[in-house]
Length: 300
Image (tube, rainbow, N blue to C red):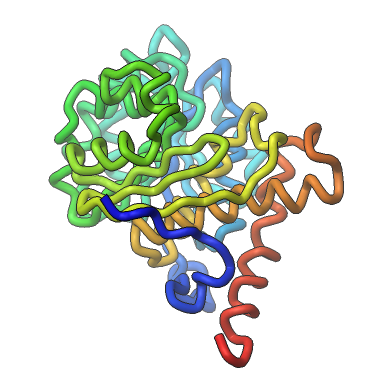
């Protein structure tokens, strides 16, 4: 396999993100599905990040017990209440209503804040086959559905993106975490080929893989990114980028870079550790603006 391409500012001129539209509909409608009675804030983090990354409209499908609070916490979003399972996650009974919301969505993010793998699988088993034209991002625990059926995303018109950490990647492939730690890009490529999806695997370094074996490496980041909610922010950034028209691999690569670089920015102003995941989304718009400025410089 070829060595991965390094993702940094110098790559942007050759691989630029689409220009943002001038009105919200041009930047895509995002539907986020997730949250739970015990982890409601994950959807707030992901939603904020998706909008900061350029998404135009945001809809949230979350559990009945937290929907009212979520509507206040994310005033930019249309929030829909969904029935809960005994674990406090969204029940599979919600699949019909979520599918109706998804029909008008450009991008669908599934997974932030889900806590019960069984409930996640039951919901996705009913919902995912009814998605087709949407750009789908599957995050974290929602990957349990891919573990059950690695071909479950192949019917989508545009490749899905899986945003996983090393443990989630290992569980999805049925291998030891230590094996993934030794060769994260290699295992990401294996899953990308089997699932026919783009895989973004986060760790100290981040790797992106496609079914064709293409690979990118993101070395931006600081230790402080290893904090609760950080992965939810990264998934939101990727979703905002795909909603705005970025190719799935491009969204995964630049989403990983923006997430890592946002951490670097906060490390300079706050410290290498101690900043919060909720502070990351606000650092994204200046980074996107900087990328576009650099690519426009003479000689680039």
